[in-house]
Image 1 (cartoon, one colour):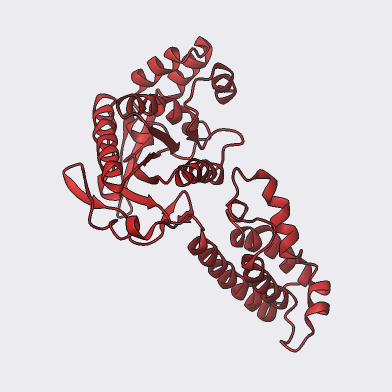
Image 2 (cartoon, rainbow, N blue to C red):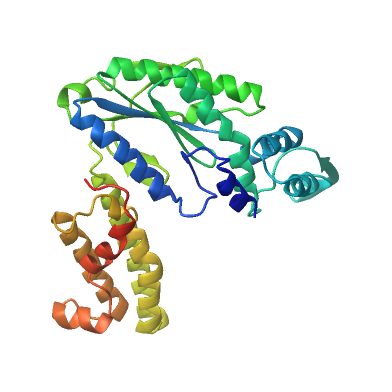
Length: 342
């Protein structure tokens, strides 16, 4: 209900994802790619600074959250419900099996509550506009407590200056609003297909929270997706296939040793293992190319693991009996939800 009211009031920043309908982590990555690719066409370079809010939910101050809800124009009944939701809460510390006394909690949102993510979105919504106003040309993207600043410029040095200013303004806003960033987790990612710019990514430094950071040398994981500088998502694809193969091999052991029927094994392959394998594939799938072969080879192995059959079984009969969907159909089914093509 709170989320629905916020959407109608346009009370959140357009760059906020997570805790909102039809705004997944993959959608956020798609938006990033859609911002970067036009910049490349203009011979520019792009970069992102990824920051993580420390102890996000426990940091939310009740009175501050209620004020932000009213500023967003939310119905007073929802504000009152939130006020009640955050009061009269107690915690008990357990150390080495020994329970302490109950203590009252006057701040923070409970972990695991379905309403906590949207309330936290309200709490940090203003940081996006605050930083974007101070650093022109920067766009804020966030997924609950993961806050990222995306910038484009003519050169790497200019990017570093812009992102350093983003970090400074973010820390200033955090201090004023009773939250802090886990600066040790801060990462910077350079996006370019220019060898000249890539060669400088370890030479350019940014000052973030009193420490120097450089652009990541290898692919960096953001919202569950491994982003490489060229945004081809090759590393992400290979890691997802590796995880899927490992899970499928474990399933093969269950089929062989515990007698799990092929129908149950097939359901696990389809619902869990295949979904893991093709995570974020829609962002780079164009309907053809070598990635189809990589995925299909993995699915062929899944089919053998599902049926528990010998390697000598012909591939055609294997795919038919396993009833696993060919990868081209899987990828084409996901592609309409993609926000960008490579």
